[in-house]
Image (cartoon, rainbow, N blue to C red):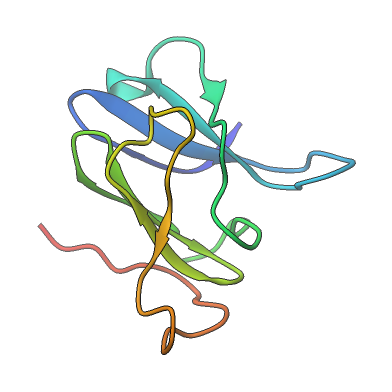
Length: 106
């Protein structure tokens, strides 16, 4: 069951929790509207994905482009479908160590 999700007209990214052992909350990529069988992304940003929170930890920035909040900071990718996915930390020298969420405005 997805805990957090965001989608564009082209794809959707969601988290699923409670895996053991290893990474407890994982990221999955689905088709448009979160349709179809989700596949786990192949490369994670530093830190652990946020579990269910009041604020979103995933923000869609455009086709294949996302920002995620982890326990190590905020990371962005311009191609979540790449192999490997390349994540870049925002404000690596100054970002908070454990952001609680990402606000989103349209």
